[in-house]
Length: 65
Image 1 (cartoon, rainbow, N blue to C red):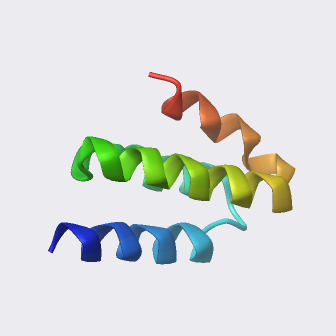
Image 2: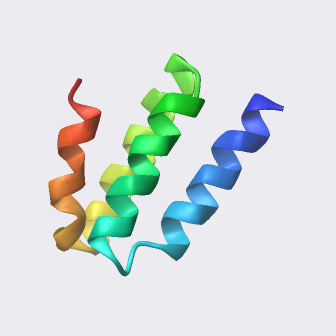
Image 3: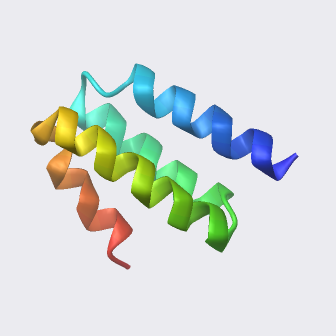
């Protein structure tokens, strides 16, 4: 079940990557719902999205903690 949540989160982040504010909100939600090892995997995924859309760079601040 937890794995499904990670995949769902990736799908949502892909869909909202056009809007930085919405993307940041979804990242914050994901950090409360996912397990620690899934968050590490999510960080890698988000960094690849940031390479494609540099505007999302401001959301990386939530991943530093």
